Image (spheres, rainbow, N blue to C red):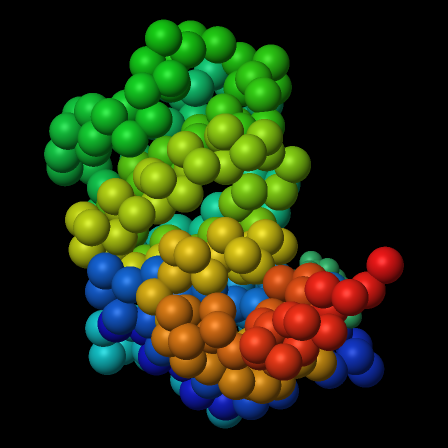
Length: 252
Ligand code: ATP
């Protein structure tokens, strides 16, 4: 559904992305892993049209190149970004934020049914429809942000750090909802600081280092790769073999 090749972007002299390539299929969760400053957020912003890719980039959605479209036209094509920090309107109510999500022309039909679906995904929003979003917890605000993105009837959802600052309980709720959204056939491309959680939920993973592709694979295989475990899962050594486990058993 989404196919990217040769995506580059420079902030002035700083080359943030160089020739990045990736794909996301319908009904697939793809996670991007990379160190701080690797270019992950820049990649999502470039797909959403918030920053311009350098000439030569190809960003295809359903076969159409969207690399040079304005952000609102990219939303009309079916891409919704939930930015880091959520981008919700704090002074507006939950209902108003969700309504704003349905503004694109592609979303005007079936708005009531979509709202019902969002409230089914995040039931705790139901009794808070008239609450100002700034008075809600971080996790609840994240639900509003994802709900608002879903109101635009996306084919592809881009998520930048969806679990940042959330309690474990609310993170689990958000990740559960993402699985349901995948089940509805939406593609999900997410950047997530919790590498373990991303590897648990994702179907495939891309590694980005210093703005370049540095690896890709099935999440289930990545999870068992000792290099990935060392770099992203905070494990200092490879899984123990029988010989090394008896050694470590003798450590003080
Ligand atoms: P993090 O995990 O820390 O959020 P990231 O992988 O999302 O990092 P980006 O935010 O995409 O990284 O930034 C990539 C590089 O581009 C970094 O070196 C960053 O300092 C730089 N950068 C990002 N935004 C700007 C900007 N508006 N102007 C100049 N440089 C920027």
